[in-house]
Image (tube, rainbow over all chains, first blue to last red; front, side):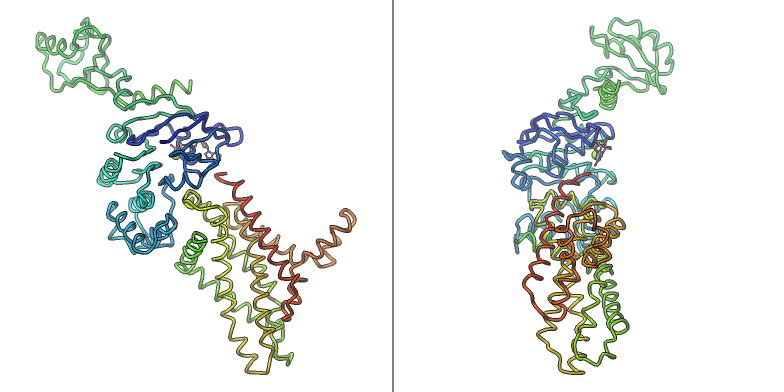
Length: 306
Length: 244
Ligand SMILES: Nc1ncnc2c1ncn2[C@@H]1O[C@H](COP(=O)(O)OP(=O)(O)OP(=O)(O)O)[C@@H](O)[C@H]1O
Ligand SMILES: [Mg+2]
């Protein structure tokens, strides 16, 4: 378990992380979201024992990150932002070094390295100098390094940044496959990733938690939740007719699409289908929306800024 | 101890993976030779010893050791690998010592590669080989002092050029602190006790005997203390500058 207790970090007069408190249990994949400069990386640096907190602390698997840092660090695998690596070394040399420091020797070290190489598909670059790798491969070497000792806690700062769609998919699958018995915290700017991967999403803005819920719950906060969006031939007419419905609160036309927001009374989708049929309006596309995470994201982080 | 050695090995692997190691060794050898033959008059003296070789080592190290040491921490900070290194389960002291030892061993290797000059004097005459060995060890010890200073100052910045300049200046002060010219700077506004202390801090002073093959325990203790104190300072600077 990870328990952050009023974790705070100042840089001079700037309050980068402001009394962050939360708990994460094994099996959870926690997504850190937030605008640039929100304090995601700073929080991760504190939890992994790199940055000392200005005040507060975190406890990882029973070990305080300030007073019992070494034991806490043993439990964690960490991919720092930008995946820094020792570029002069070959992938093999680098992973062997990390395996050594993680306490593997001889045959154990070789099998730990080769398991990580398998999981991230690094065979073809095993003997290549890290500096000469493409960005995606570098990121994967960084991930290999983080999972090498099969840690109970994985902290990944933008793990899929710079990866092509195939690689993104593969890394997400890897994270999902490890999620069962671990604590995984990832930070990302890719909102679909949160919906696809995380069991819990935490939105941070200006160093504070502004939302903490499952992605599904967050999406429900969107004003698009249960709204109906459609494309039709006579859009203006459709808008004025549908706006009159008791089931509709308001209508909006944007980018050639009509969105009808629910008033909460009755079943909107059925009412719309019925009305459009009665009016003889041709519908080319219609969809009931679950909600839009990006809209919730903008909403909660803007509120904070105001 | 295991961690220190692993860090040292990784660091050495980095040296030899780039041309840096080879360039450094070549320049070191050329300069060491040039100084002893041209400035020291190795042949002209007609004495079979290596004094003209060792006497210039402090000046050789003044620039070359900061050039080697400047990257120790500045580069880790600049590339961000320091975050990787210091979140591994190792003590900060092990990281500092491992990196220091790698550079020191490397300097030892460069020094050892000057062996042809030792063969030469044995060919030309009948030198005191015990004294030469002592002088070699003394020189290596002094190099360690320069290196500890460079390592500490390298932790103070992410800019290698700044680290280099700082290290050269501080090493220069340590070299010269015994000279009257430098002591005069302090005379008048520092108490005599401190001035005497400064005078006794000079690398030149402590290397003098060692370079002639005379082991004085005080000199050995002095250089060991310099290394120890600057590595402790290195730790303090590193902890202060974490993430800054
Ligand atoms: N070493 C530092 N010195 C001074 N300020 C810093 C330092 N590191 C971070 N900051 C500041 O702290 C704030 C939080 O930065 P942080 O890197 O945690 O943001 P982030 O949420 O990870 O952003 P991004 O999404 O861009 O990665 C920013 O305003 C940043 O400028
Ligand atoms: Mg960040």
